Image (cartoon, rainbow, N blue to C red):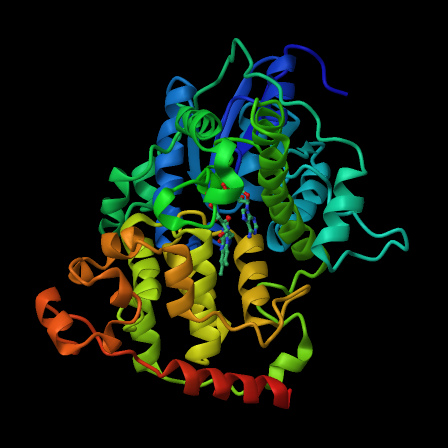
Length: 468
Ligand SMILES: Cc1cc2nc3c(=O)[nH]c(=O)nc-3n(C[C@H](O)[C@H](O)[C@H](O)COP(=O)(O)OP(=O)(O)OC[C@H]3O[C@@H](n4cnc5c(N)ncnc54)[C@H](O)[C@@H]3O)c2cc1C
C-alpha cells in the first residue's frame, strides 16, 4: 500500500504526455516522482528509422514539459529499475501497459522479478479503449470479424472512460549521477532529417492537430477521407502510437464535437479499427509474422529484386502507386487509401510477399505500429482475419481516376507528370505521341514504363489464389 510523500518511479514508454496519463497522475498524487525513459536494445532497437526519429523528438518534448527532469537510461529495464529503486529508496514503479506481445511478456517478468525485492510495479491501462482480454465473444473466443467486434464487443460494452487533465504540480527528481544522454541513444539518423519540416512532435502538437481536425475537417470526414489530395483525415496516427495524445482524449473530443453524428460515427469507427488490430495482436501474437490463414503458407510468392526496388522507390510506372511510395519517402506518412493501393499492387500485381511491404512500411512510416501494420498487411494480402477477398485486386488506374480525379495528389509527388492531361495522368503509356510530346514525357527516360501489365499480372494472381 503506497503512502503519501513516497517517491514513485514513472516509466514512460509509449505515453509521452502529461495529460490523461494514468501512471503519471497516480504517481504525482502520492508525492515525488522519478520520471524515466529506458532505451531497451532488445525492444526499441528494432524500430524503423522514422519511428526512431519520432522517438528522439518525443523525448526532447517530454523532457521540456517536465522542466528538463526526464532521466534517460539505456540497457536492461529490470536491472535499471532495480538499481534506481535501491538508489532512490523507493518500492514503487508505475507504467502504462503496451499491448504488444513481447512487451507484455517482458512486463510480466519484470513485475515478478522485482517483486522478489519488494519493489511493486503497477501497470495502468491507458493505451486502448477496450481491454483485449475481456473484449471477446460471448463464448469467450476472440472476435475475427470487425463489425461484430466493434458493435457488440466495444459499443455495447462499458463506454470509454473520460480523459483526465495533466497534474498541476509535478515534483520530479533528476538523477544527477546519470551519465546517459539522449545523444547516446543515436536515434536520430541523418537519413531522417527531412521529417523535421512535416511534424511537430510534442503533446502540444498533438492537441493542436486534434483541434484543427475537429474544427476544419471532421464535418466532411466521411466524404473526404478517401481523397488523398484533400488531407481530410486527422494524421494523428504517429501521435497516437507514441502517446503524445491518448485514444480517450481523441474519442471524447470527437464525440462531444458539433459535427454531424454520421461524421462522428465514421471517425470513431476508425479508432475501432485500431482497437480491432490490437485485439487481434493480443489474441494471435504471431500476427506480425505468420499468415493468419495458414493456407497462404503455400502461396507461390515471387522473388524479384527489380520489382521490389521499383515499388520501394516509387518507380513502378503506375502514377498513383509511385505517388504513394514517394509521399512515404518524403513525409514518413502515406494516406490510407493509397496505402491500400500500393499494398494491393505489391502483393497482387507484383506477387511479392507481404513481409516485404510490412518491412518497408516499418522502416519508413512515422506511425509504424506493430498491431496496425501487421493486421493491415494481412488484410490486404487476403491472409488475415476478415480479409479482403482474394479476387479484390485494386486496379491502380481506376483507383487513381476515382480517388485522384484531378490528379493533384499524383502531380504533387510525381512532378514529372505535371503537364500530363488528366485523361492520361493515371495511364501515361496510353497517351498519344503528341500528348507525350507536349507533356515533355518520354517513357523509359522521364518516367518508367509500367513494371508489369495489369491484366496479365491480375490473372496470374487470381490463378495463384485459386490454387490455394
Ligand atoms: C498496408 C497498410 C499498413 C498500415 N500500417 C499502419 C501502421 O503501421 N500504423 C497505423 O497507425 N496505421 C496503419 N495503417 C492504417 C491506416 O492507414 C492509418 O492508421 C491511417 O492512414 C492514419 O492516418 P490518420 O491518422 O489520418 O487516420 P484517420 O482517418 O484520421 O483515423 C484516425 C485514427 O484511427 C486509426 N485508424 C484509421 N484507419 C485505420 C485502419 N485501417 N486500421 C487501424 N487503425 C486505423 C488510426 O489510429 C488513426 O490515426 C495501415 C494501413 C494499411 C492499408
